[in-house]
Image (tube, rainbow, N blue to C red; front, side, top):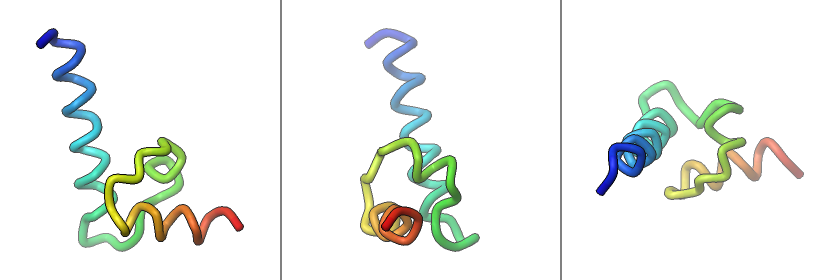
Length: 50
């Protein structure tokens, strides 16, 4: 796997961890990435956009 591929996976994992952190629901930047890997992220999207 290329370094770029590893970087993308690292960013995805970091976003997932940030979204599921102890600080509550995902912030706008995480929600706008469109990466809905968890129920928490989908719940955040439903609260942000009608």
